[in-house]
Length: 337
Ligand code: F6P
Image 1 (cartoon, helix red, strand yellow):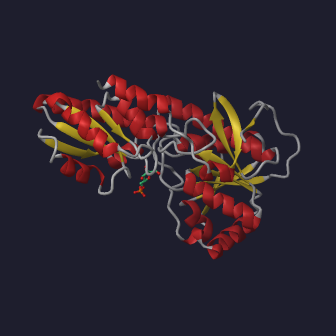
Image 2: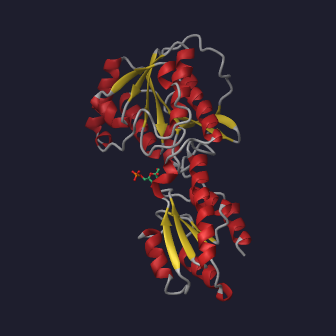
Image 3: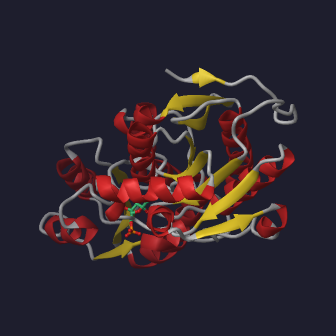
């Protein structure tokens, strides 16, 4: 269950056991992670709490890669993509021994609580750290995939979809000039959030997402309906077809007799300056994470649902599945008539 939060950002927490916090970014970077970090460090300073930056995600926690942070160490980063703390996908943290090393390092630093900025892998790690070592951690959702339960939007998603739509607008020009079919693969490992929004905004003829099973047949029907002989754009979520867009396009060419090209947008979707929306979300959720730690919370993620900041149990964020908006799936069919 989501727990709505009611306290204000300016009210100071008078008494808290939390005197020093650690902050890290982990997993795939997302535009707005730096803005979240800035908010966390400055909110902590506002409340008189010390901050330690943990570099390279869980790998840095295990190796003791710590750096003291203050309001000035996060100057001039609000507009920057990537993460100044660096990030990693840590295999060692997936082991009990790795987590024990990390917990010992945190203890040695005198860290009373953590703020984790990342996606579902990051929050699985935080859940285990809490279960095994009782280290209070608040999650801040930072991933372009938007696939976390407990928040309508994740930090980085808005920037990523705008980057992808800009690319598709350009692809449309050349697709139209040559009357070609373009298969455009977008990110979103196991979910269709990016593909669905990008497909609608980019005016795609078909949007293939993992949440829909009969994609192949439906694409074939769409691209051959009435002997169609004009350009089309098919947006495909990665992970939707084994072999990706390249293999799909090759198989489809047996039925669709127009020239085709494949574009895999890939990591350009992860980079770039965060949008204003992502920066504001990062500011709110970063500040909330610190306030929640000071108020005695732990093992929850700060998210935003229906424009309200809410806390969701950390385990739910990656164990429960956030559903895609089926009305958008229907709408894409209507609009691509
Ligand atoms: O989780 C974010 C994400 O960008 C996914 O959309 C994508 O599948 C994955 O990360 C790519 O990861 P990597 O950068 O490790 O190749």
